[in-house]
Image (cartoon, rainbow, N blue to C red; front, side):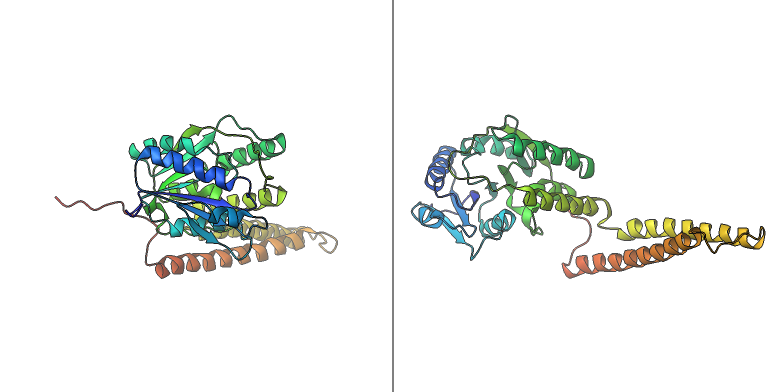
Length: 312
């Protein structure tokens, strides 16, 4: 264990006192069979039970303790930043992901993929979780188009280099493969087992679902318009302004040519409204364009990534 680890297993924990010791044993047994140097990183996400004390009893382990509950995405981000291994494995702390499936992910990594996502093809969850999950998957396929069947499965494998320029916020941990695919990394998926929860209670609720939907829209925007926001806002602005201008022009013709009264008609107001909103959207697009350029310049990078340069 004094060697630099090849594998880093990152596990967020929130009120999982009944699962910690069992999970650590399963992870340790699975990694011992692989026969490569490893580290196990637990993140106590502000647990209010005995999760921390149970985690401290485990060996070997690196334990990150949050001051309060910041959420699963923040826990994953902290664990990934702490990880020293070439390959990072993430999984949930509720024993529903099976550490015995880790070799399946590594086999795909060895085929040359950068990211491997688990697919819980036979889920053991109540319908209260399955139905929202299926709706979210349909929306994700439409908006993000990442070819992943099960973005909610936390059992995933990544090459360490994937997180060189990635910071996680909100509920973004579900969409890490989509984010990395946007950067040009190769993403694959493998079927993994899934077990019913035995200890503790699920942390999923409608609030997390809503946050995930908002983050999904953010990924959609980033995928489509992150390098050209003016095309989105400016394009809509031009359409609205053009429509408003057309309405006002026609109202002018009716007034001058046909002598129509406009005092009791709503169309002039609609035309002015469209023009004003269109101008505001166009200006917003310009400002967003400037912000995006400053973002890339501040990080000393461009809107593309270079895998390698070969000189022969």
